[in-house]
Image 1: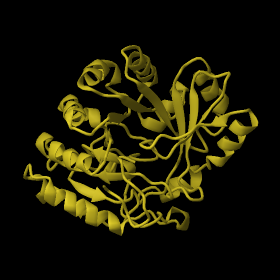
Image 2: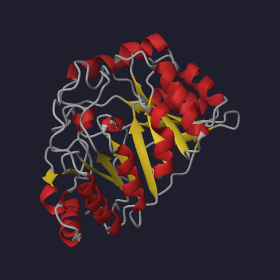
Image 3: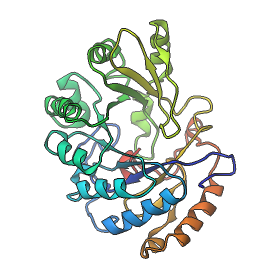
Length: 323
């Protein structure tokens, strides 16, 4: 099994398949994408070998991320490949929703179990301002479509931004009142390229948490392969509200996930200073060398990131490794 020096077991792989993104989100790529080449992205056969090794070591959930993963023409094949690997019980996707309405059915038929869609505002003008795309209506239609065709879990990710959505909790609560959907607020995280923006826009999720508790929301129990979100439910609401608060105390204590970049680099933490190249171990169907490497590598995983000390490692922006 993949277990580190602190007895944390890693059952969840976040796999980036591209650094390319077609949005210009103010907190990630305000000046557009700085990755101008698709060269070097993991091939479908390399992805199969990678996920097979992780599955043999106890990984049960794979989340496909980017950049924007739907910009890969073979995304449907990637989903199907991951889902067919023995041991993988859940395949999820994080997307900006740009192609959700068009491709959700193909993804669902390939085996996609869950999709998280980035929606940083329910106001069309604010959404356009934050993302650089006037696509809110199309993306919300895509979310409705994804639920209608039977994708088991459809969630919304919302980055908390002090100047754009700090006062929008009532609008988000109204949205989930009549829809069985989980909406998760994510604290803005400091990365290499966003220091000034972070100082202006960071908003603690604790303020949202206090409001939820005051209104009678109750914390749900986590499953073993769930991510870091604390999810809350309320009997008067069909949907749920989640909080991802990386600056909170003991955030890393129950970490269960590892990351691999679109170029085949292992990240033991989103905010690590270094990473290990797995590419040479993905050229053979023999999983043993890769499995041994992973088992040794996780022993070097630090207990916690250093975000509270204003240190974000080598991560320039979240499109680099998928957040």
